Image (tube, rainbow, N blue to C red; front, side, top):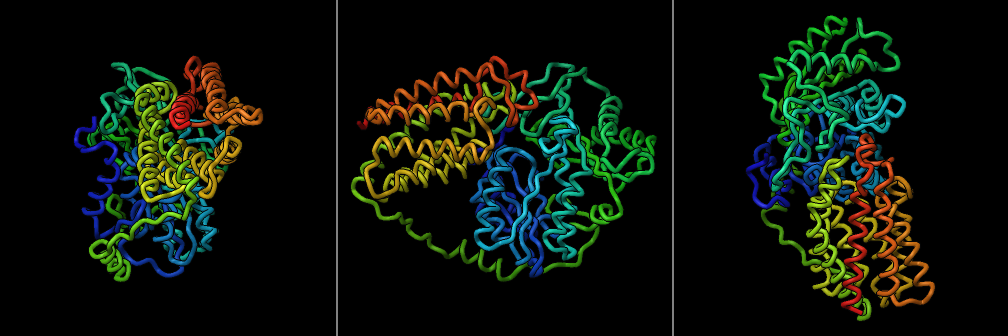
Length: 583
């Protein structure tokens, strides 16, 4: 378990602070993550990677010459927010455009996609690429739905090495696509991981058993088998990967492959070497030429006891990029000429850190009526934070049935940060709309992940509808909820029946609109809609998930409501209490 921490909510930020202090030769801190401490040639494509904390050396440890130009770092097991990614990419941009790269998880797809839109609006040419290498998470016919695990490294490196060669953005993207199409990974685990502050692991494995086909966020495997010997584990990993070759590889014999045997956190290096000796022999027996193998911790999951094997099938071009030199805090290969720190960036960072006085926060002007409505908004967000805190463990247990078990943790981080930001804005005299939009940004930043993106969208939609000029009436609130419902469906792609929060949000929005159309007061209309939400959340018990991390374990979720749907129903009822108190 993770033993050394202060406030669990501050763990990711404090870890990043310590990492940058220890590696100033390679990286410098920026809002949302880190960028290279060395100068990037003007016009070079910036490869910006990112994901949640808890996977070191991914992602911050891979920033440096020959690899990433920057890394956006989210909270524990949660994607960075669009605002954080935008900040890192802006700092890393050298005039040649930006390629955003990440593992294929719903939260990362949402946040990096939003960041790409913001960068494009700034005039920065931007492309995105999601690594999807985990063969256990979807079949070959649905390879685009696969998760990104240790295959992140060879795909990131191929794109970054191409960028170092001065290729334009579209060609760097094509290299990433080629590497991604030729990368496969498969993993096993012997115990789950325990997050900072938690008293139990996200999943457990019975004694003398192993989980097969696990993810890196505590997701359970797709099955269990008897605990193997090292040679048996090696055979399982190799034979599983050799069953699925890239489309243009008919036979492994005579092929070259970059090979990564990855430790997920608590399997020791000596154990990995024992396994690798057999991996190398089995690949050799199959006629595979191994190119620059990596054995060690490349993508971890806190203290998870597990390993994964990655094969990237190389052609001449990909081999050149795989062998190219790199110099980062956690990954070094070959030799590079000495590089001087970027004096302009370094001095600007030091000046900002040492001498700048933070500007007093300002809020847009608001009417007295809107500031009065902001009282109710703040009370509602306080109620949200309190009900989430009270049910966080329950939400985690529900999520762990078929997911990674961190829904309660993420919701607690997001709702607490949203209430704090709202209180700060309220204290400055903000109107209802600004209070909600400040809360939206804070929720997205601190929660990360899919729920962070979606709740940020919900609060922002409501804030836009309410504005800062007038006292919002019931109809305007209903319009804001309706827009939030539509925005969440656009952003996440889910619809009613997919076993997500949409199964509650849509009927809640519809019921609220119908009730306000009958001229019911807001508290009464909200009460009716919250009752509908509670029933809809219970109805997800019998659904099979078609989206999100629970999808690979769909059958396990039968008989359990969706965690996101359940939390939304709890929140709608809590907000009703705040509306009654401020009626």
